[in-house]
Length: 437
Image (cartoon, rainbow, N blue to C red; front, side, top):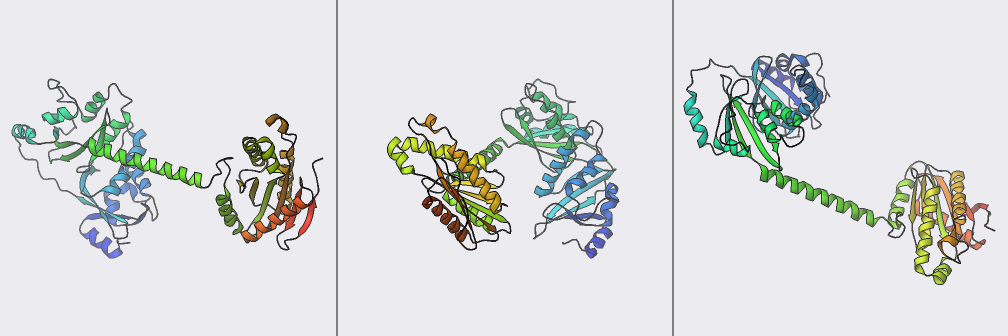
């Protein structure tokens, strides 16, 4: 924090308001002058308050009934100004003209400073030469009255906003010009709100979108007599380039996500592959929880491939994969194909009794599938299942070895059965000898 008590007192002596915000845009410190300039915060601002809440109070005291509905838009724009401000800008609040600066500290926090501007008496002006000078400005330029109505423009402004040379626009507001540009487009309420809010902050650029993905950046400065001097720059090329970069970044993100998915997904069944299975087992085994592991092997699968062909074998594997996934709850289970005809199920927060129940359900679900409908002459397919469970943290390799030994016992005992082992002894402690007849 850079806004120390000494610095607060020093800034108070100079009549400068200060408020500091951390990296998360939360209030960390402020001085007395801050609550004098912004009395709406006096009884409410506190350490840790999000800048968004600060802005909501600020706007609730400023907006009329016709603009209150736009308060969240104004808050978002205010946060963006806070994050990106590099130059001071000015605005009026409670009859004070204030110049605000935003300084980024080495640690990333931001200090906002407000200084009151004393307006000198307006001098007599000769506006006509100023109006003529607008044509020498390369960007679009406008002069607005104290009530934000157009007094004069240059030709470049008309070009930027597609205004015919014979169209009378003196007396119109900028948001009316924008609304006319969008007359054949969607609702302009949000755009007009952005413009009205942008007019309040001298020197703070705001952006305006036009039909055809065209963009203008507007900056305003107000003179002591209330006249507003605006410049309008065409930033279409920059915005389109930004959009292209964002689109390219999003395409890259999607491509990376797809590569990641492919790297951890079994191409045939769409289940997790062996790599993802190993990662999930290691992650869950490291936690303090009950963890179950089921290994499934299709009985006599080579004979199925040899008799009916590999396409039929692939169809069988897909059906078995779907059956396994349908039995176990997706919220706590990861189902994977970990070998040619071998599947694994990692069950978080699952004890031995529940894991054995899921295993029995998987065996029954596979046995009940209409195999003859899938392949003529295929009467049945059975599976052998090995189960283990334990209380974490566990050794994932030891756990997989235990389940694999249970699966080996199931195979040796005649297949089409579920066998369970304890993780501690790596020996068979109980058998579910239910067997498909």
